[in-house]
View 1 (cartoon, rainbow, N blue to C red):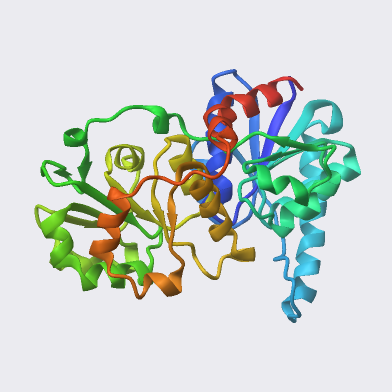
View 2: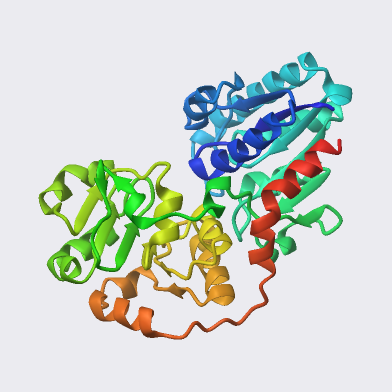
Length: 358
């Protein structure tokens, strides 16, 4: 079995699926290393998991003119040389397989793989393709995609619809009264409403919730991930029916499982997790996301499960309480086959099996 070197980063959306696969591969005693950036989120998360970590330089890939493009080309060139040396040190073509989850850091590694003839596997998390993976796919042996509609962005001979590797805890059952958030158990008899704007929070969602917070507390027990920058402000509203928190950690799977209603952004990981759990939800896609990818992610859940997709401009205007009532009373409208749902359930083991075969 070759040593597996992962690469990918710049955001949790690239790092979390890599760590999910790494944790599974560790069970098979596979030797693992990680090539990441010097300062981005992977430089913190990966070493915490006791994984051998190599930091290299890279440059941001921009589709528009910027003076920084000139300096970043230089940084990218250094990163290619660094990645080349690392892969050569690890044994090169005979001893190494590289698995990339995308992000700018993956491009110099992909180019180094091409130069050395090292097998490169890519995983694309979103329904729309990032520029880094689009470039790297030229050098890849296999390209795994989370959403069926991504296949049109890659060479058909390389594409395999694997689904998104969901963490094991998202397939367990949970009891609501056993969940604690900020040390408080969820004991209320009211329906559970879980709201999240992502790890950094969402000003748009937070403002809407604050405008109707008293009415929400009369009708729901609310758990609200507000983001670190908003945490202090929302503490004033905390009581037995409302819990605000800066960040949701391991209890995320339990909250997804037990919530009666979920309002969320629609990053690829969040959508995949909710689809894998077959949890019909309300999505508010981030309008400025690259290629409007969050909208397309959410539409996959809408088509498969009947989830609702409310765009930002509309969300500002809706009457939230009546919207929640209508959602709970409505019949799901499903317009696509369940293929993506099944792929999410098997993705983690499928991808591990693909790696172990090398």
